[in-house]
Length: 256
Image 1: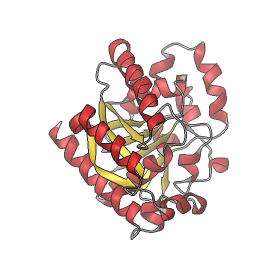
Image 2: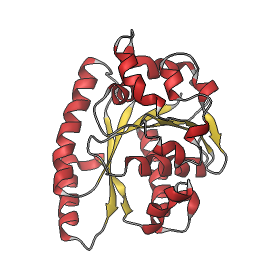
Image 3: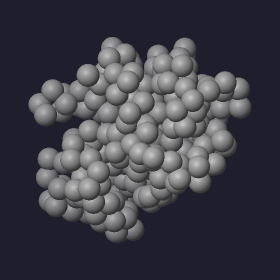
Image 4: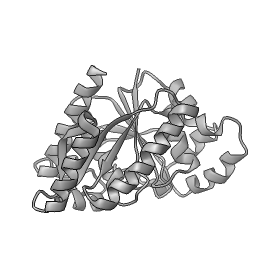
């Protein structure tokens, strides 16, 4: 049975898509079968996996409207070693169309259950807002991975996200929990980041992943080549950190 995780944070620009594509590539690199679901109409995770969003015959939009299955719509990313259920501009219209449909918040979950068995991990890259798309992701998932920068405003956004997860857990998905907080774009030379990192560990304890993703130029360059950093430059510190994070994830899941 696949383990399904949302990569979510209601704050924008915190590295959700970078985390999604690099964790997918890292898990693939250590032998896991991975499906990356792009739930953001911008389609950045799709393009960042080497898949042209403009050329998609079927996308997550078709899956949500039940006109295609996950198996039909998912495409392989040959360079990255995982499958992608891609997104493009069509997905922006799904927000409006889903409102009037039955089971609107659980359509992705039903589609993933139907295709269960083909993957070890399903990673869902959520948009930076609590929308019907994000709600579909949260209702599908066993847990949430929260990438966050160690800055003051990130702590405020985290409080909102934790409350949202509690509400979804109580009303829609009793399996949902926070799997862990991933510190990204971390620079140990900045005193404030080290202080916030310590605050996180004091408050959330073992919910904070041991792996820390450093601020890294090669990770930032990789999307312009349509690749995760793990594939673009495997020797970069950021890439190595994501492979280490993938190993930590697998170990944590085995203990759950």
